[in-house]
Length: 95
Image (cartoon, rainbow, N blue to C red):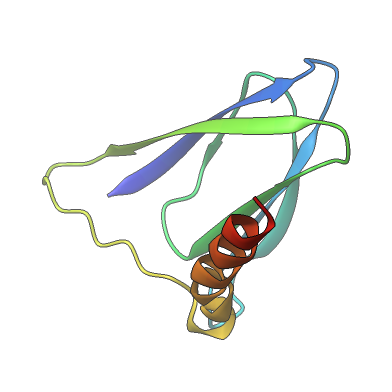
């Protein structure tokens, strides 16, 4: 499946960064994403951050001949997802 991302940025004069890379290093690119940007990232990993003061949204869609979705997290940064319960716990205790 080929992955496509359609970005919206608020306010519309803002920007973000999308890093697109593979574990073997054959792809290692960073793109500036602005409002109404479309990127195709057919393999590997990709992550997005917003510039300070802006919010970046994206619509993710797949194209291909099959209905298979095989999403995989980069094992080198998997720890980030494991911090979410800890952050939620902190937020609950501050309320």
